[in-house]
Length: 443
Image (tube, rainbow, N blue to C red):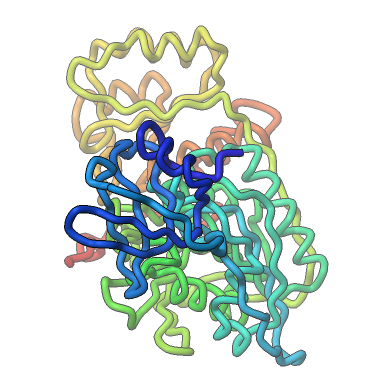
């Protein structure tokens, strides 16, 4: 194994000559001065002309190998590693909460191979480095997977749902699932349907910035998630993330109504067409919605973890090729969620392919690519034409939620008509039958 991570070419050859390894203390002489510091790894795509050392003052510097007159390995150093702190003492009378880790930035540290973040911390590590968690719950931590959220598939949703069922049966009073933020909305929607009727809060949580960065939101998000899991009066599936760029409030979003609306802000997640259901401020939960399913003491609920992945989410755009619809028909797909323009429209030149799909037994439904608002397909001729051929309007359902729901509906029904009925039934708060124009947030 190459211990000189990220080094190549002339810098690698120079380090090999003195048998240096990452973490060793080096002395490097240049025409201008002598440096002493710890050899640091580099990321894979860096140039081959610099050696990076950490000085005693904590700063990293890169030294151009063309200026190095001599290099000496002073001593063997401690290789970079992460050592979790001991677990804090816990109050055995606190409620039991399970933290299930699936990966993501909240469970990541810097990856020097690429310069990116890497799923490296286990759920136990998270618990040990956020000792405040011991004030709210008796934590049990388990790693289910350690993957980037873009690698999450329906099979992972199923495994998470079955694991939650197992934890509820074991008398945990709340479940926290750490997850990457990019596809967390898909997973929260999937679990909302698979775990419909779950008697305790199931809380997905992530972070926009890894836990080794000073601006990380990981610790506060995790604390907020554990507070909700351990003491919220409601049950169901939720996403817990920063409510603003500040560290004073955590928002609790309904699992079927939440969307990541910014690539990097700490308050990237927003509830769409409804407000957050609650906020966590300090140690307290302030409920906003009062019609949420209550927390229950029983353990009886039916998990329905199956998803049919033969469903496509298709976004309409100018010059859209209708043969794309035909592709999914030919590939044996069972459903298509259309992300139409405005109130729920696609061009007339798509009609033949859509009619073909419906005649061949595909379930076809309409959402809007607008973030706020709802489809209303009776306003214009185009919408009425689509309705007449059998396209199902999905009210104000988010396209991502609609995709996941259709996967779930097709896997948990015995006929196309039963799947259609499931799609228009409000199962986990995914449908509001009226839209409030005041619900759009203003930053």
